Length: 296
Ligand SMILES: NC(=O)c1ccc[n+]([C@@H]2O[C@H](COP(=O)([O-])OP(=O)(O)OC[C@H]3O[C@@H](n4cnc5c(N)ncnc54)[C@H](O)[C@@H]3O)[C@@H](O)[C@H]2O)c1
Image (tube, rainbow, N blue to C red):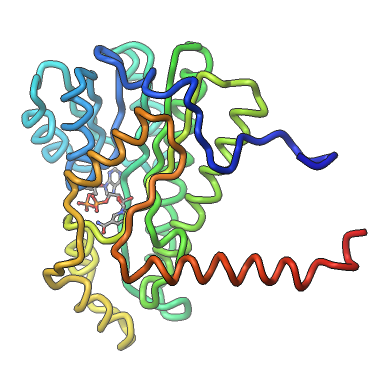
């Protein structure tokens, strides 16, 4: 680390000393957006480890359906809350702690997607997408992390970004912006916990490529985008696609990676691998080319 730089964990982000400790039998996991897709699959996979699960969702009935699908429904509980509402998330954290005690695993997973380019996405879609996908994660952290710090017990935070947080995708500008934000926020969170000496709290960042869930249906239900590019993308992505992972496969990967104490959890369809490598190469090349002479 260079002089003057704040302390940070290894960018590889492995924290093997804590691997798995937060995910033990009887420990408590919170999963936002647990009523559908990846969140629902995560809740079920974590329950299979014997964890007690707080399923948080905007839709109470969906959260309750996930609890009913857990291997031991009595060890789960549904909580209705809007992650974009800081007050609702604080009240949710109080209710979870009253029901279960200290939280060991926080999965900030709830997210939505809206189609639209960088210049045609409506103000309301920007507000909704950033409110849920970015502020939702921030609100989850603000509501639960102080309790994790105070409890001093093994804990972990899993933030769900996307492969769209590591490479651009035309036609979903607000989603991509929100997921790049979650990547930066989560890397910073990891370094801040390390700098604060909170080594009992591990961090993992989930960046999946396409996953067969209801997320594109939600974008469709929101109506027709005003521009053609976004309409075409919405149509193409909403159709059944052979290159999608299953929610169960992604949840299984995430749990395995958390048990091993990994920070980066990145799984994407092969067509994206080269694009991400090329982006990283171009950034490294730019740093080498543009820095000399400017920083002493
Ligand atoms: N499906 C994919 O291709 C894909 C790929 C990469 C990342 N992701 C991310 O995975 C996460 C889960 O998405 P999914 O694909 O399972 O979608 P999904 O639509 O199947 O599930 C999302 C869940 O979040 C809930 N939710 C939405 N807004 C909420 C709010 N304001 N407060 C609380 N709950 C809310 C919904 O009710 C739903 O139950 C999202 O963050 C998404 O961006 C999805």
